[in-house]
Picture 1 (cartoon, rainbow, N blue to C red):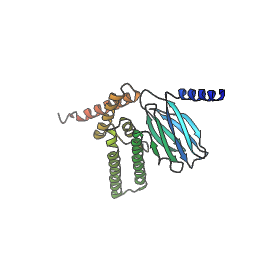
Picture 2 (tube, rainbow, N blue to C red):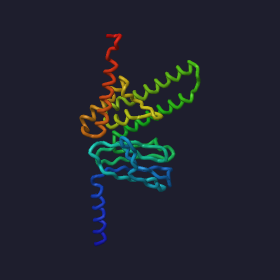
Picture 3 (cartoon, rainbow, N blue to C red):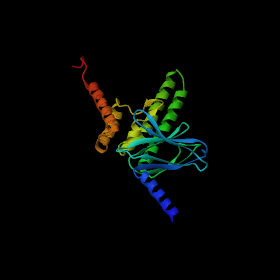
Picture 4 (spheres, helix red, strand yellow):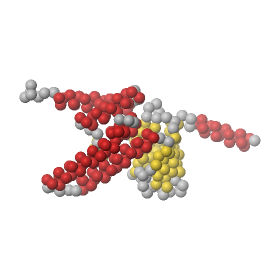
Length: 239
């Protein structure tokens, strides 16, 4: 009887310890002996929260305290990443392989399925950019062809992400901050891109007012508006 009572106490205590946590779980096949990292993607830095050396079954479970506002995280294996967002005590499960880590399935979160769509679109864009950069040449025809390919690739990325940007604030935030080779995709000083950024800023002001990410977006939106107004001001020759 004492043995079962002890087990009950352990189970109840364990449950209570994670009552205010969210859970990230799943498995990574073909990755035995590798270390899987659970990291927080903050505005200005990456913070490692936990890690696990994967066994033959590849199973993993991470816990972290829920936050007042949505935050972004990632799973890292070698130099590959799975990005996701959390804002409650939900459980999100990822199933993938060590051979193709970014080709994963996600359960328990429709919003993170949209972040997955954004990630895939970003990977396709990066692959196309890398192909364009490898197509070196100094002739006008090559430069024109490369410019057209780049514009088409950017257009395809935005066609995929814009419906998400105008429909899901968390996935939208992830989309507008995506980069390719260190270069931003959504330019706050581009007229059309700034509309998307302001839409996300407005959504965060409504749903997550007071969060540090809402403030970040507000500052970006103000900067883009100021730049747009300056462009509209007449020059001395126009006056």
